[in-house]
Length: 557
Image (cartoon, rainbow, N blue to C red; front, top):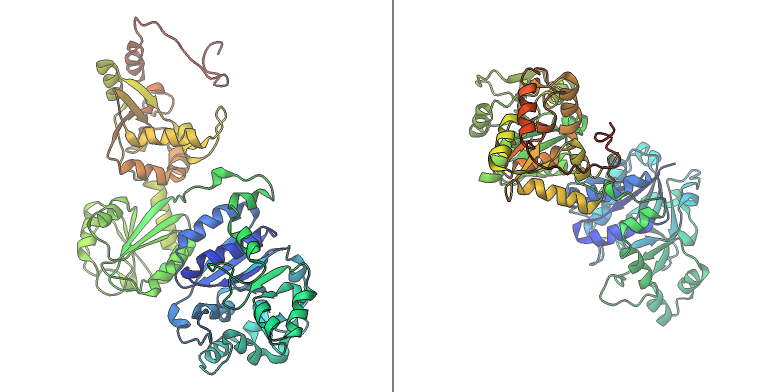
């Protein structure tokens, strides 16, 4: 069973949010965590998911417009409006049962028992406030999300949160709105640290009794401004918070099995879509993004961007370029596989003209097309043909891999070796696998080796050494069906990110195929001459041939 948890906060509380998540994951796997936030960079989510996916878990970027909550009344200086994001759970989360947690707490145990608790006729379950016994603390709530949706509670909660007379922020709203619809959880699920000093000096025995009643708290909640992440704090469990703060993600994942470091790598995509807009409104853009998770969408503008666009950063495949300038714009145009002419309002004619000059395919919808653009590579879809456009983008990327990498052909490469007595470093698909983080049959992946191989390619030719890459970046039709399909469907998509990094160096390379000038070619008529030239390299030379034990291609074979 997947345990669904919701947190809410902003970038200023990022360390606390991550510490709470670390504490959850240190005791639980198979967890889906939504973080309702206005401004946390999506790269943070991508990085966490590299680890969490290894234990069937994930963290979801639930972007909320800050204007939605700007009028909330928090009642306390140390609490900001993002704490009210819990009111938006029915909008962002589809699952029926959700555990909401504040981000100034840590989880110290497995939560299966809590998630198995039955709601009965209640809309949420919570722990009594240790300081105000008539009320429930809103920092830990097991929410009957199905009932919240059926009763359409969200708008009412937000409206109540705007009342500047509420005494205890979102907690007052939760208690006043739900009243007898709140069921009681055991004290151990919200052990509220921070009241001790006040309770001690004011003889608040009931508060002290609540604290003494729990010997092994399952959730420790640092209420009041006395937080363990302050310079100093009074509460007695400061070290518990710092224990989780200082845990490495690899330590946490290793508790559930072997940690696979090779999976901690950059995202890669099958292709690049570019879109330049002068307005925030873009036709069907979010639907296309959802349908094409393996295509990267690059959206640019000359100006800052409204939240309508900023919220798209919640998707792994979206990059935004507000206030884009010269070289950055040049790079995005150069790397585009497809241009989308689907923005409302005026078009960036100077950008479209450059796209046309490069013969990049342009796709548009009826409603947002450029009416006067005369371009053979321009395709218009009806407004409801979102699936058709998505398929066309995918097909275009598959059939037109574009990497601006110059590789000399086999004949030129052999001439360079013969005329200049060059040494050769040859990179085939196996070496690219190693760089990417995968092992191959006769070489296990090793991070240091991968990094050294990568540096050799990016440096290019050096000290009379010819660095060779596959000659596949122009005219794949030269190769037989098997080879062509391999590079289109496997090599290009898997190595997309690194190939584009190579292209940016403007290096040129020799051809890896100096050692295989026959098997993959459709036209083999020149292969005999190539082998003759190849043999000249060693003609009259004493040779020492070094072979890997498992390559099976030398002596005795």
